[in-house]
Image (cartoon, rainbow, N blue to C red; front, top):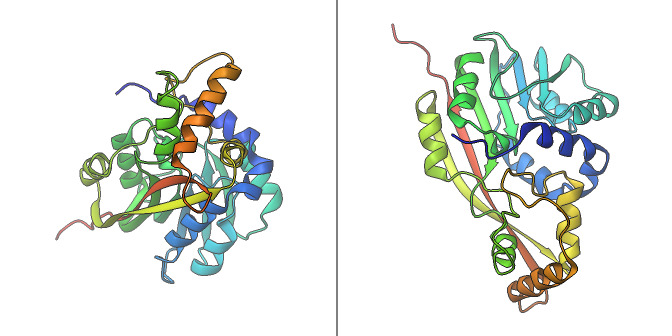
Amino acid sequence: MSAQFLKPQIAESFSRAAVSYDSVAQLQRRIGHNLLSELSPSSAKVVLDLGCGTGYFAPLLTEQLNPQQLVCLDLARGMLEYARQTRVTPNTLWLCGDAESLPLADNSVDLIFSSLAIQWCEDLPALFSEVSRVLKPGGRFLFSTLGPETLYELREAWSTVDRYQHVNRFVSLSSLQASADSYLREVTLKAAEEVLLYDQLRGLTSELKGIGAHNISAGRQSGLTGKARINAFKQAYEAFRRSDGKLPATYQVFYGDYVKDKPHG
């Protein structure tokens, strides 16, 4: 599988966005809260927040689950430094690491919570293999991620201007399912749609930059974008403006709940 995302650039992009992230991450918080609502109080002693970002969910996971150990892991060192300085939670370990090569022992985690992080993984089978490895038998993997219809308006508007890849591409529900099913048992896997509305396109593009999720895929254009091409892009996006005067930006969200089955016998 060819590398679709460039991990050093992902880490650097999100590290740079650490300070601005929380101020523009309303959608990310809403999706994370949706995921959190799937959690009932449990006896999970060790909880992993995989792709913890600024650590926003660390206090909420602590409050809801009261784990003996909360491990907050992220690829972006800058995000972790910000989280460590701004979130005060007991029994928390802040860890820089890659979801596809987790720096954790086999059968060591009761619950993995991961909101909007695994879409940046290059190799989903490797991710699910690692999740299965570190989960205890009976352990649970609860995640949200983005689907391929995410920001289709942005992609279609750019496609009228040039052939470069301006929008990050994410995997389909069937690909996600196929990667997971080899390692874990599906409890639920569902799709939802979130539409954000803007008065001007600048609101969307500055928000994407603020969360560090502007285009960091391998096929993107290098160099500056000319003014004429920017104007053509803006004009193409205007075709999506709604009757209420708002510009939409659609996110396709997948919510997954998987378990590692206990061995028979």
